[in-house]
Every structure is written in structure tokens, then in C-alpha cells.
Image 1: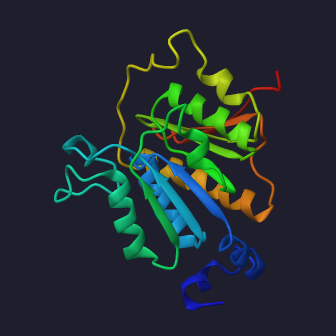
Image 2: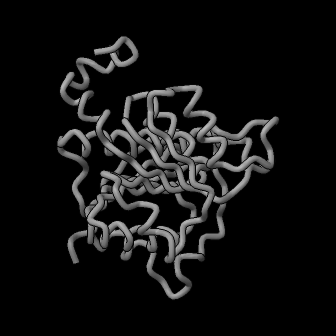
Image 3: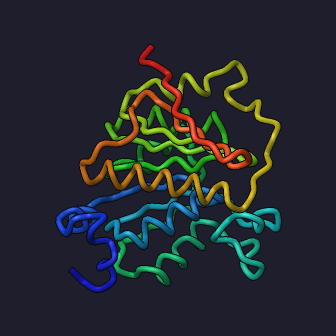
Length: 229
């Protein structure tokens, strides 16, 4: 076990650390959630990461997005992710893809990965991603944030969970509140990566038909069962 990963031991076994180095994870979105997810995956030792985002940084990202800086406004988020990966853990096989996920490219972008992390910001895009994961047989870790609140779910291939959360007549575009504080995506990303690491290591995760809700304003967590229907 190399020194970089020594502090993983105890919480993870040496065999689990070795297994993580063989796993491939696709992170879709490199904004508030995605930047923190990438940081945690890079540091824990996932072997290969693909980061997908066609957007560029603007000043409104600076309050919460780990990859954004005052000196890289206008830079592509996927390119910034690649830059950060090289600085934090050059051992990771990293690929940044400057594309927005859509129905045409989804399966191509996620194919060949062991896990997909949802770091998107619209219901419509999340539904596209969940359907692509179902077709490719890849588990998905969902995360979403708003203001003081975060939610996380483990979505096995073919689970209707995101369809039930986001399928509406407006295609999931009816979220008017776009507020996001600096700590909310950091917490949500930590919860998502914890579930992802457990899944990749073969450990039990959150129940597949449940949603973990965090309320940081009131300091509460709640597990909601959405059933199988």
C-alpha cells in the first residue's frame, strides 16, 4: 500500500483500496456538486474518472464551485476538472469531456464505467441520464441541492426512482429556486461519494427505493421510502 492511501486503511481494507483503483467512474456535471465529487474521488483513489460538462465558469459560480476561481472565469469546466485532477492525483486516469449530456450522446459518454455520479442541475437531464444508465446496466448515484437542502439516492439500473421524482408535464423544469450555499454541495457530494465507494467495494448502500434528505438549516436528516411502484 503506497503512502498516498495509508489513511484509508482501517475504514477501508487494503483489498478494497486495490479494488477502487480498478474502478471507472463517470461524473456528469462539473459545477457545485461535480467539482466536490471529483475532488473526493481523486483523493480516495478511484482508478479512472470521466468528467462531462460543456459549460464554462462565470462569476456566479464562485460562491460554491470548488473548481471555479477568480482567475479561470470563462474556462471550460471539464478542462478545469482535468487541470485539478493532474494537480491532486496524477495517478488517476482522467478524461474531461466538454459536452453537454443529451439523449444522443448519453450512452456513448457513460459506456464502460462501473458507476455514474449525477451532478446535474435539471430534472430533464437527470431523466436522460437515468434512462441511459438503465440501458447500459450501470448504477447511478443521484444528488440534488437547493439552498440549505440536499438529497441523495442510490439508483440501480432500471429503477423508476428518478422518473417518479422528476417526470412532470414540464419535464422537470419547474424549479424556480436556484439558491445554493457553499456548504450544501460539499455535503451532498460527500454523501454521494460515500454511497459510491460502498457500492464499488460491494458494501451495503442506502436502500434502492429511498431518498436521504438533509436539512442543514435545522440540522436534520430523514430517510424517505418511495416504495417500488
